[in-house]
Length: 148
Image (tube, rainbow, N blue to C red; front, side, top):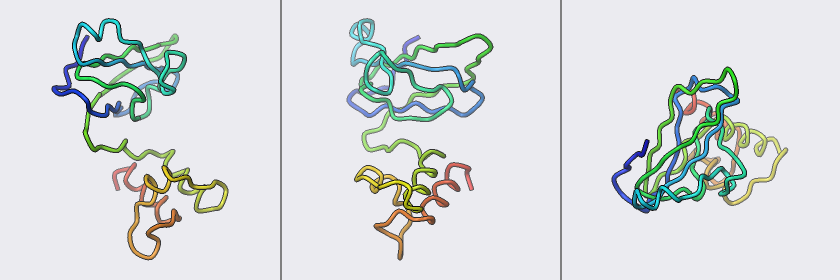
């Protein structure tokens, strides 16, 4: 099945609402025309066909760009896929996840060093802690992930 996202040149994301098996994985492909989509490579998180995305996490799709998109599911025995959503945005940032909260907590605790991408993504609180990834950021991210 081909999904028409309506416009070309946007950043693509995959989002799941839950219920997908942890061992199910996905690859994605996209192109600006349906003819080009037929020969577009299936891609995983490293931008090649050698890897797969987990089917139970939301993520930005690396190297997957185009108006028309498809996904391919890899389903070992006794696995299920309940939902996969693909959306596109010109300015969107991948949704924050529990992994982001863990990274913020590790950075705040000195167990991990923050890179520029971490600082841009994980420094979510304003005020006295702005510019520093602290425990407040980890808590704020976890609250957002859990809808609190």
